Image (cartoon, rainbow, N blue to C red; front, top):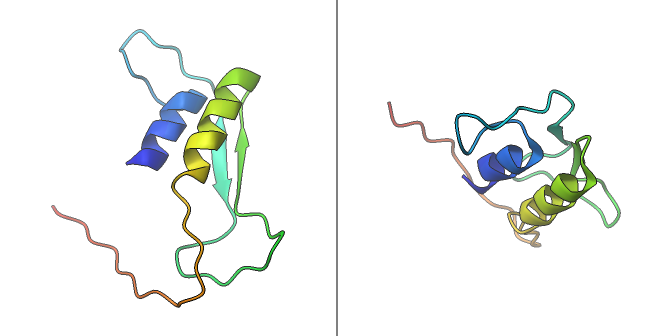
Length: 80
């Protein structure tokens, strides 16, 4: 959910129906949940034409990341 709001902050979605979308905005993720990483490895890249929005979304995305030494077992759950 927090990643979705970061996308909205970038301009990939709307909070209100008259909000404009930014076709230059997006996020590239370089790792998946459970991947092993080393110090300095890039985790994601945000892009946007507005620096203020880019900074806000990047800060919010960083809050969603937890890095630990234990391997995790995760499963994707889709409730339809």
